[in-house]
Length: 161
Ligand code: CO
Image (cartoon, rainbow, N blue to C red; front, side, top):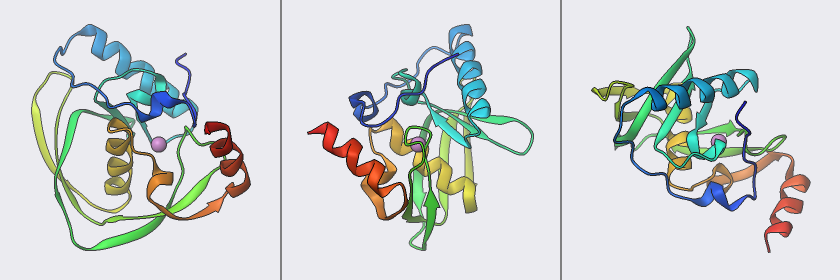
């Protein structure tokens, strides 16, 4: 199974490359990513978190999982909401992050078909968190307060210097 990269590994700061080939290899990567996410009880995972520098995100949904290839947010609502977030790359660490409540999303599916949709609630939060990963942005960069694991996070951050 793919291994999850944890903070402060510099891989997490890389910008992911656009996917241009919608082939069996892509399907295989997505499959493995979904397996890792579901096994680790995550609700979202970006490819960079398993050391694959591609714009791929998997999200847990009511049935199974959903795949976003080359996702882009085309609209952010002015209305914001602060929610507690965690991340598979930060085990045991949680923090409050303020993000726009509603977004418009554009992405491609596994066949390269362009899909546009509107998202709100928890889904909008997870999508924003995962797309941040594709740009090397982590939830601790945006957290207004760390609610769990502050000491652990400080230890990891010291290791960075
Ligand atoms: Co994350």
